[in-house]
Image (cartoon, rainbow, N blue to C red; front, side, top):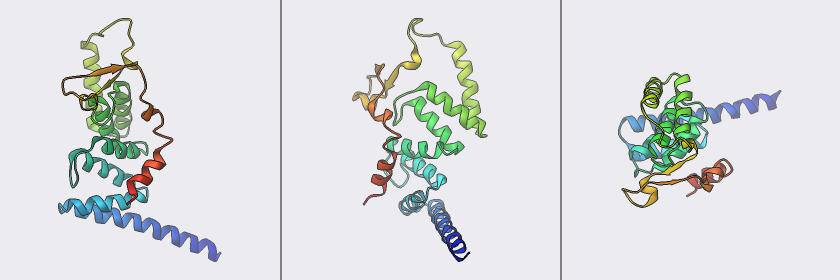
Length: 191
């Protein structure tokens, strides 16, 4: 019985620690102490706080307290979105649609908009409505080519601001993404 109570106490303390680091990070963020907020969100993310994942994505996407880095933003949004965070799902969909930090994948963007919408995100509902209207207006480029299998690399990845590269191949790094998530986690926190 003592072991059960001890185990519960340890789990409660760990949960409170994660919650307090997130609360501290949020206060720092609201008081515009972005550098410390970023560090505190990382601490909270170590405790698997999906709101901290989202805030890390937002800060890296918008360059708040750190340099803009779409790839890192994508990583954190995806971690949060996979755990059901509606705002992260919406922002992840926007990144798939725009190609910021990730290869453009319109089908994935639409799927994430649907998930965000089903979780109550109003912006995602609007995007889906506009998406369906846009699909009715736009004509396919070719009747014999399946555009959902195309991948378009954003110009920043392609190396030229005016160049867009289209390819049918799946980038190897994305196909192994799930296998490497724990390695990426370790690298993100390693100092």
